[in-house]
Length: 112
Image (cartoon, rainbow, N blue to C red; front, side):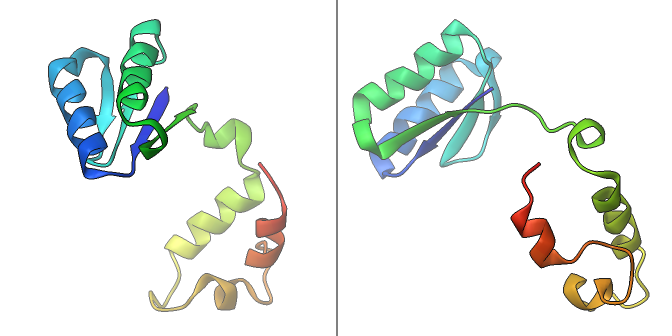
């Protein structure tokens, strides 16, 4: 997919118009940003918005996250355990102390 992020009111207006006119190419629209299909036409729309607004538009190529292929099992287990914690107000860093769950600082240092 192509992520188009706008940083000005005029660029947002152009992006919104492109999304309304070409709904079949829009995967999702977020107001200041939109995801276009990863097709030549999606690229055409994204580049058209940037051509009109230059540095007020950022385009990134994205791919969906497959949590089972990309995220380590220890992290997925920590998410499940944290979701089922006894006290909803307990922050994760405190929750992880004294367990086998990864601590936030070590997770911040490791890339997926």
